[in-house]
Amino acid sequence: MRRISSLTGTLILAAGLLTSSVALAKDAAKKAPPAKQVKKEKAPPPKKVPPVSAEAKKKLALNMQSYKFGMTKEEVIANLSKSINEQYEEKIKATTDMMVQDRLRKERKAEITRVEKTYVAFEGKKGGWDVSIVEEEFAHNTGESMIEKWEKEDGKNNRRFFFFHEGKLYKMFIQLDVSILPEDKRNFETFKGVMTASYGAGDVEADRITWRTPEFEVRAIDKLKAYGAVALVIEDPRVKKELVAIRESKAPPKAETNPVIKAIVDKDHTDKPDVKNNTAVDAVIQQNGGGKK
Image (cartoon, rainbow, N blue to C red; front, top):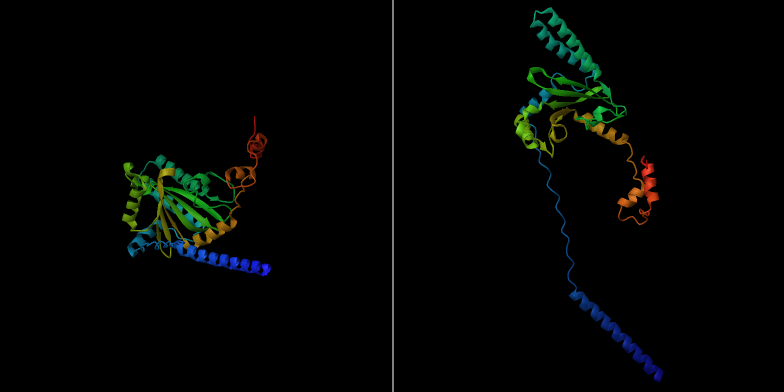
């Protein structure tokens, strides 16, 4: 009888504890604060870019001058030679001095030769153009090349770069005479004002304005901080799209950071070397071309 009584008491106690636990759980659930609903951030509205007007399109197209996308290097040089010949012919006709005429003919020939020698194919060998005002306009080993010429006729002082892909003209970069901006207001805001006054509103970014049409795209670029210059770029959007894909596919792999340096920089790295060990640090320096003299 005592065993039955003891067992009965245990069961009653267990039932009581279970009931109490359920009651406490319900009470805790009632008192628990409701979970905060995380508000989903609304995506910013799409950027509204005004369309290029017919009038603006005509003005933008004038930057092509007599050149056309698809021209070969030889056709561009022939066009440039013709322009140079015409300029010097006027000067030669303006004088009867035989010596002056002879000097002008020599200058004409030298200028045409100089333009021909500016041709460069970007085939992997780094040169001066890789750190220049056009450094962002080309890549190596992608079938790209370039010709450059100063344009000083009609009181201008512009510099035109002709970019080719697979031997065909697809882009011109025109370094504009910076005198189009007042000397005390040479900044992006002033440049933007001058450009939009000429070509209308465009897609404005931090340092550039872009006008897009099916036939061509034009970028007005602020290079004042780096090179004290401003520029217009006119290019074939179809070739540009193709080149972007080619450049990405042929871009060299990013160099991996030395494991010791990576461990120093990466605060969450769990297997950091002992950087206090001068031998380890010296090894990194030696590996990267340094060392004690």
